[in-house]
Amino acid sequence: MRVFVRGLEFTGLHGVYEEERREGRLFQVDLEAVVSEEGSSTSDELSETLDYRRLAEIVTEVAHGPSRFLVEKLAGEILDRTLGGYPEVEEATVEIRKHAPDVVGEPKWVGVRLTRGREREG
Image (cartoon, rainbow, N blue to C red; front, top):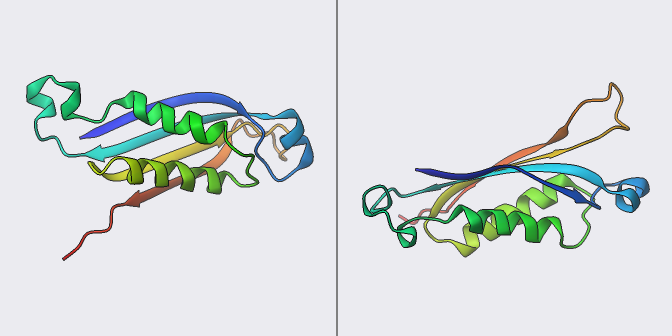
């Protein structure tokens, strides 16, 4: 089963260039976590699943944390917190889009998508 938050928006002071860090840029984040379906689809109990509010909180905490030069670093921190804080998460994917009006061709978004899974013993 996949639990997700899509299109979470914030203005962040992240970027390599001084004006990005001073003025801020609009970001959008999608975070998706793969969790076991055991119980949650039949029990109707929040305690049997990963609450998507927790995913939104992770994104928000990292977004409003220390300024970072690279969106890759933001993505890594989001995944570290997701996998580190929730053992039921088997794999997680984050996509970070940044509004980049100063990029040639004026793309609506630039960004990264990163996926990490839990190390398996055996």
